[in-house]
Length: 438
Image 1: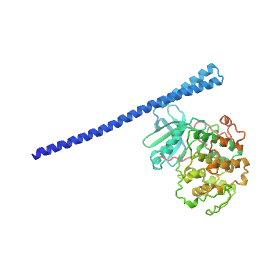
Image 2: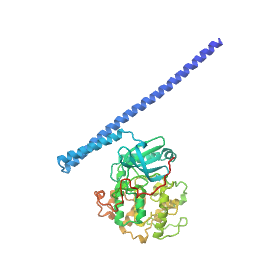
Image 3: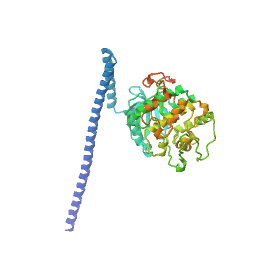
Image 4: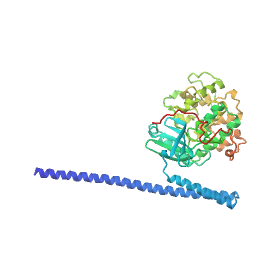
């Protein structure tokens, strides 16, 4: 009797196990079906979106050609050219790209969790810039959303002021962004070579930066990290905004409340409730000190906070206005030779930025025009008073920009035309030691 009881018991357990296994299999199958359904829906939704956008681009071109009074033959040739480009693009979209499709060449940028290299596509021979980001570091540093936002921004914004993204892909270890290669270098390198720019030269680059910032704001993106390192120059010397933000953002959490002694004096007169000031330097001494430390700060894991708006540092909420603060800091550096709140260490810079009323000063030796000082002062100020808070047009109409042809600036000759010998030339970028990403 006992034996038969055991047998019955054992049979019962087997049935339960089979039932559990079937439920698990059923759930897995359901998940796979749901995932497949979602994939198919997304795929066709994307296909329809691409088709609609393709039609819209053709309609826009047809309308422009009609308005421009172009001959019928030229119209047909241009429309055929557009169709050819669209077909090439669709072919690239269908081909699943991977790192093996590219020959890696010179490194032109590096940071805390990645690098940027010039690369050549093996099939076509086309040259690009490849941004390679280590996924484990992105996760560890909480940068996933930032990088995703950057990818989306580059993919969405179709502007000659923004570096173009051609495709992105990933493997088990890395995320790759394939972008256009701009051989003119970056604004940081230009400023280090020139020390300072004349107001006419600075006006050209500041104006193109205004257009670049405006183009991302129209798509409801905030850059948050606009600095000379992220202002790239094409082979003609025109400026494009990118984000080679591979460095860890400065952690200001160690700063105490007493470090942020924000005065109430709007005129910028001294409020001496700060720690002892660094030794006074002439403009030339400050410029030499800045240049000595600049490259080290640019590629360190800490980065440089010199262009970051006070509201971003204080982490009390910020909007698109923070990008216009960065513009003011860059304009100051172009004309004076170093950023307005530069200090011997990043934490001291943070304190100066938050206490900008005390620390924003214009050295007499720099001989800035009244209009230049006024524009910088209206960008490096409280959020509520900052130019650009109501849109870029507020900045464009400032007297310092008198004479700027905003509609044609990208068709004009640039303030400086970089020396570029061929499509692989990297002389306008910093040289880096080859270190394997691991």
